[in-house]
Length: 147
Image (cartoon, rainbow, N blue to C red; front, side, top):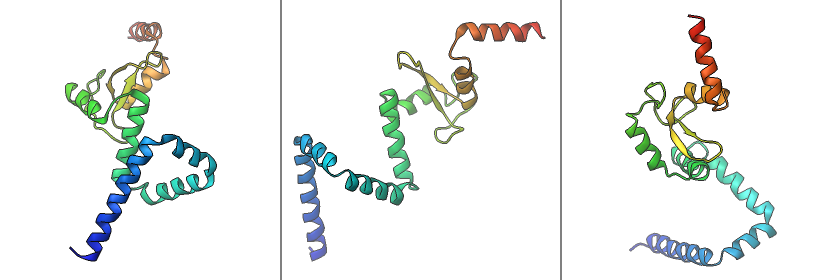
């Protein structure tokens, strides 16, 4: 084993030991962050600038967002899309995951329950009517009268 390999192995051992210690002592980490806000902010700004354009970083951020907002894993979303034949649950338009125009996770804003995966247009339409069945019925009647 070369000296570089030994150093790398040792570095990994130290890092894994530190991670275990930090998990067992979360109060220390919170206290340190509170006592060193400028260092914490500086670290995350630098981290973001160095990684913001990588696919891995974007995927990691999206995973965290889905977990935080919908209490789902990314794999659950892919499974839902597969069950919907990778198409919008309302209009049936083919959709892909990723980007502004891609798949949108539809959820009840009161209960937080995920209902399905929608295309951008259907998601916006539901949002504009405030998810109100009454408003949708009025709009349908309006369209029928004008035909």
